[in-house]
Image 1: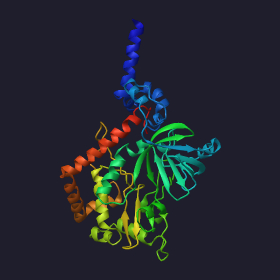
Image 2 (image 1 turned 30 degrees about the vertical axis):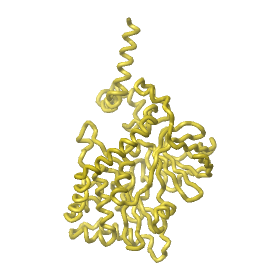
Image 3 (image 1 turned 120 degrees about the horizontal axis):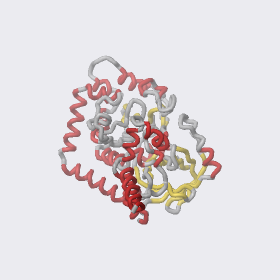
Amino acid sequence: MMIVLGVIIAGGTWVWFIEFGGWDFLLENSRRYPQLRRISSLLDYPDKHYQWKSSMKIFDPLYFGYWYRSNNLKIYDLYISDGDLGKINLYSGLGCDNRIKVPGELISEGENRAVKASYHGYTFNHWSDKKKSWVIELDSGEELNLIVPGDRSYFTESLSSYRAKKFGLLFHENDWIWLKINNEDMGVYYVTGGWNNYWLEKSGKRVNQLVGELGCQIKEGIFPEVWGGVGNWKYYADGTDKKFSNSYYLQKFLDVVNNPNGGDFSQAIGEIMDVDTLIRWKSVSILMNSFHTDNVHNWRMWLNPGTLKFEILPIDRRMTLPTRNLTKSPFIIDGSIDRLSSKIHSSAKLSFAIDQILWEYVRDDNQLEDDLKYWDNLSSRLSSHMFPWCAPG
């Protein structure tokens, strides 16, 4: 009888912990109750459970049936020597362009390619655990970013790109693959291209200034604001027309956004940015409820050599969903999440243009049905590959 009772208690505790918020309760109350602090200190990595992001199968009866389903995703086999893996693991995460790159071999669909591999991302969730995000550079100039799905809120970045395409924005094609490293399963990855000359040419755009945030941490978790000057940006693809100054157009953009004076912002920003692209970019952001372009990261702009104006590009527009505590995670997007957005929303003309775009989109049932169909197809295709694992991303 005692054995049966023990099994019931242990099973109930396990189900509570995994299925019904026990983990969150433990983390949220560890500071309030000293008894829980020792337990959570063993598990907690800055209040996030990235340490569960692994390539182990999850021991949960509700997911056992997914262990044995066949894999229909494209498989990437990446081979890196043990010695080079040791070198790459020396990367501390605080560097900028000193990231270690090592040689490797990538095999996919019967094609063998020599590559250079390094870790992707600015923050620890990309490379602190066994399942890491990767940058794969091919001899052709193509770059592949293999990103842990959790960083892009699983399917939401794919949906964002799908919507960006419907809004007529220049964006990165993306896909989902299964990664193996030295024959060891790493699970499902979100894969997209790099920001470079190769991508511009493939997209049918002239190689010209392609700029974005510098991406270097000043210290752990602290990044410089992009509005601090040209030195906080970098060029992802250099202009081939040498009459352009390396900083003239970017400095002009920063001057307009940083200008504290009033006036017609729509006219001022229209002298250096393509306004139509800008309002469609902001519309996708609001539609996705995305907070993820802020004052320090996720900025990409291409200087159109024909107009000499920047066209802003969507990057990492993942959806932000509310937590159980809505005061910590508001559902309605804040117009001032970055300085440019604040300026946009201060302009009645730009705000009205954005509202018009959004209204035309959400009032069209066909658009929303199309989005749901896209989402359901992704879920149907990928969920069975994610469910068996301790954490899918």
